[in-house]
Length: 208
Ligand SMILES: C[S@@+](CC[C@H](N)C(=O)[O-])C[C@H]1O[C@@H](n2cnc3c(N)ncnc32)[C@H](O)[C@@H]1O
Image 1 (cartoon, helix red, strand yellow):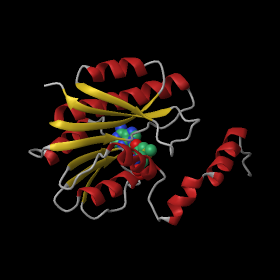
Image 2: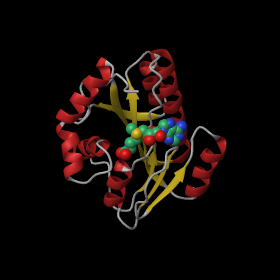
Image 3: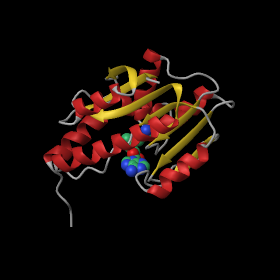
Image 4: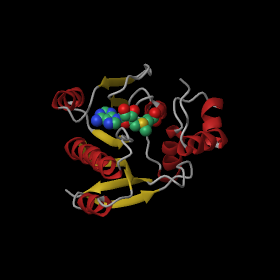
């Protein structure tokens, strides 16, 4: 049976094929279009230095991890986690599983044990159900989880980068982050689709 496409899926496909970043992703042989978002934020805010230890949450297919390991070099480390599989990236430690599950959460903490973490970044997004209340609530559960991991693992001068969606909980989330960090920037890289509700929060200077 031939399935009919919805208007929104036609619109998505047409946007996708006209998108210059999709073309560039193929030209540069990158794992994901998301690579450009991290690149844009890094160019503006200089996130990476050689030797940094990085946690990448929601890492698959690996665009951000690939970018990170290239910039932290052999003296640094990248620990990545995703519930989906991810093809191997040399130098990156990958943990497959749902980070909301205690066993995966503990495995991640176990792996980084004594490392001073300089950057926690999360590009996690939940599976979209189409029911806006459920999607937002699932997304904010993930944000809270990433924030919890950042609070536990980040060194005093560490940086927390997280993708968030504008919604009812946005202001609350920002407010909670200000309890923990002195500086928070809201970034919308040019590679992030203007129609998308996603923004990135870049938090620095832990309140000690
Ligand atoms: C937008 S993609 C990440 C793209 C990635 N940053 C890149 O550059 O290739 C979002 C990812 O979040 C992951 N994710 C969502 N919920 C998760 C969870 N509870 N635990 C681990 N990963 C999760 C999804 O499996 C998905 O691969």
